[in-house]
Length: 216
Image (cartoon, rainbow, N blue to C red; front, side, top):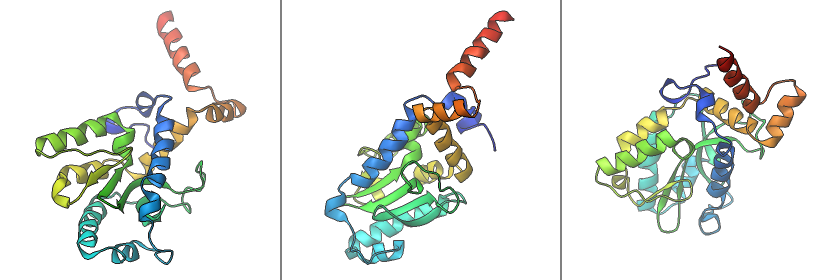
């Protein structure tokens, strides 16, 4: 698997200890934000059923943005109902070893009480993607209404759709899994696991590289 991430940079340069918290908190906020007011009926099990359960005007909005995501989402992500809304995830059948036993979510889309939410996990994990997202809104003369890990909107016209499509297509499912794994290795539990396996920690590897350069 490639060891390079966005813009050809090695993943090691992209990761900082706080990145795992971003991953974890994104999932928590995604699960909790307005969840009590907008949970779908218990018989809603698929994205199509989710959309059918919405008022006509809201259903049209969600369907339009859903079509955008499906157009640009890389292969390997599975569209499903996750946390009571539409999500594009790494299915557990492919990657079951997640910290909360839920599929790793990459993009999600939900209808809230007063607005819709598009969860772009890549943009809220990556400073580069977040900068691109902000620039896209500014360039289109549109207001960026951000939640804890999402973009709020009332109509597809509120979004720079082309730019968002490019951001969604930027991270393959293989890269997303690797980014998830690398972020977990930055935790104490991850460092302990590597120590048991005899793998040096990221900090020790970095220190060794500095020492080698000094000797040269």
